Image (cartoon, one colour):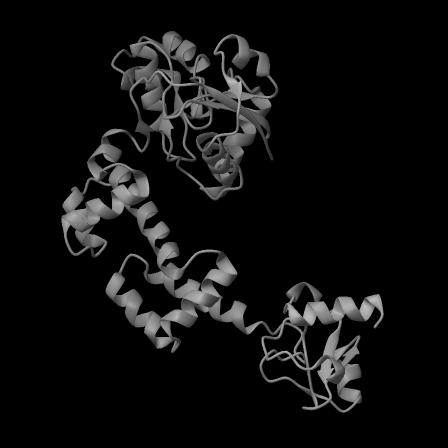
Length: 351
């Protein structure tokens, strides 16, 4: 057998969809031809014949497989079924009873539905619906005036206890803690080793520093000396730096509008009050320095707010880029005004 035939045979055995469209295989004993990704039972190798096109297979007298439909250019039943399930979840995820009813109408077993959905999207339908519900719950806690029990009932939780359990599972916080903290988990200072690690994103390189409990700083570009000398950290890739990098990547691609990370920014009480005000600025909106000064209780402290902004150790996650001059102009940003504009434009695009 030639190397080319060996490669094709391995693709058939592995149901490798990466070869779909590159060749088709026909089974002499059944008279049927398939895509390489077809899940039908593997034939005997001696019964297999290969063709470059579906037309060539049909001209040779073979019939298209009814399972993988190699005669149709864009026939992907598993993808289509998964998309159908996703559309139902997207429409009814906040209404558990209705969601169950609509999924049942698809006429697929729970096991099969879970299998094809996870194959297509990497998560189960339940996990996907849970992600949507938790994001809606977060938005309602921060942006609505409803009580926690009203939010729980509107999302069709059986009890307040069930809602608290669900929320804590996804955020490691209670709904009340999340609402009080403006959506960010904060931790008390801890004496633990500091780690830093560089990450590449579509906005450039970030160096993320953290200890075992929280993100400490984020820096733009290459500044490893800062971490070695000032913070005495080690260049170590930790679970927390990886999580922060993942959430930054999701933010820069428009998939995340709010961060969910434990933070431990070092600063004065006034600086921390300013940074808390920053995390309360909604995604896609801006505030002036004067507005932030008023929010922290001193409307004449615009200059001090500007200095606190400049000292923000965790940019983007604590969104100091959302603060503008009194006339709406871009002023001061550690990553440069060009990056500040890119961040604001990104949020307007995905708002």
